[in-house]
Image (cartoon, rainbow, N blue to C red; front, side, top):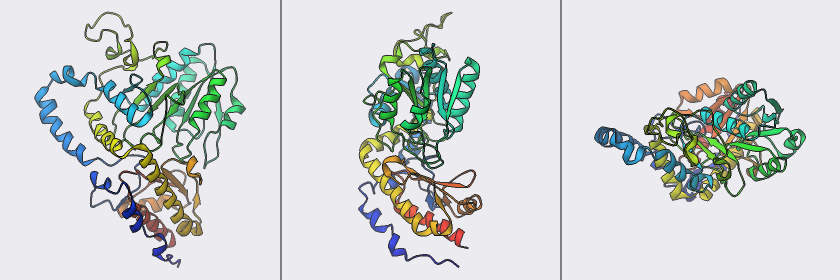
Length: 408
């Protein structure tokens, strides 16, 4: 039987004690049934503030203000919250970010808007490792419009690089669809470099920020990004199905048209007129009535991010993933586990993927123990480490539990 190495070599106590963000994990709802939560890159823990706010909203805002709430704040919330998200997390000036719809719908809108802006170009570049929704939406739109897909097939433990793009970029490239952090490997793409390369070829880029927003420093304005989209239930802790967001660079807003024309994006939404004219500004990218309840929890998380600051959050993210790799090398690699994420923290988001042929059954066993990582087929476990809510002790407990399952 394999023995566990001396625990003193990987003790998390000192790391948690020295953590500058040590006060934050207690600001999240922590169930005694969950001993270690290592899936913050799929669904973030609720904040304690959100637990209180959701209850008071029903009685005070929804129940008390009723329809008056739309005039008082709800109507503007997709834009005011978008501006706050842009300022706090995205590096975006006001008037370029909206909140609403699902990630799939936002992607559809922005992809179509980008292709409409490049009508003389026929090709879309996307990679086989991109999140399924991204691939499915692009495939559907390409079939709908008669566009050609150019596929990049990155390594399992990496993602798209500038060299990959140079091999497929042509004068016919209209749009590149790429994830800032690859959902499986955690590979952190070079956003400014790739964006500049695309622009040199006359193409637009749409960045998926689902696995990076809130844990990776991002400067959409400074880096010249055209379009971006992301969800809010991962590192932004908005809760299951909380609304997505979209970013459109200021210079593109008035010239782009999105395909889902809804009443709230019209120039005169309350006149209920016979024809549609798009609203000026980023509101034209809104379609129907947004989910107000779904946007509540994200606001509380943005407050915590504002307190901590993205640089400190990113530093904690790097420290957590480095610790996870250190423990993996010590405890799991000798048992045949492969690391399927970049070793260089400059190329890694806030999750680490490890692979072993037994991980489907191991993951199921861990869940029964209240240790919650994430399983990705065919045989990968993702350790999603959310810096404000995850402790080093949870990382240690999780990896020791994986070791115990494999060893026995």
